[in-house]
Length: 47
Image (cartoon, rainbow, N blue to C red):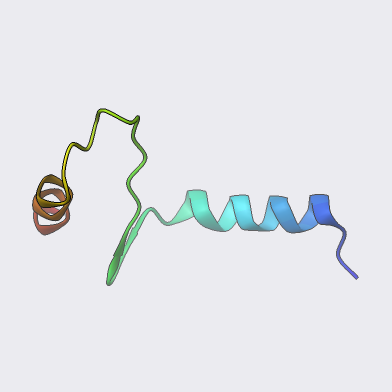
């Protein structure tokens, strides 16, 4: 059985490898970087 640390490392590896894939985009930003849902939608359309 996988311990908590191993599980977190596996999740971390998965999340950092694919930030953009078909149907999904991961946005990493501070609280002021994305000001509205419209702005987030515009970024997603560009990518």
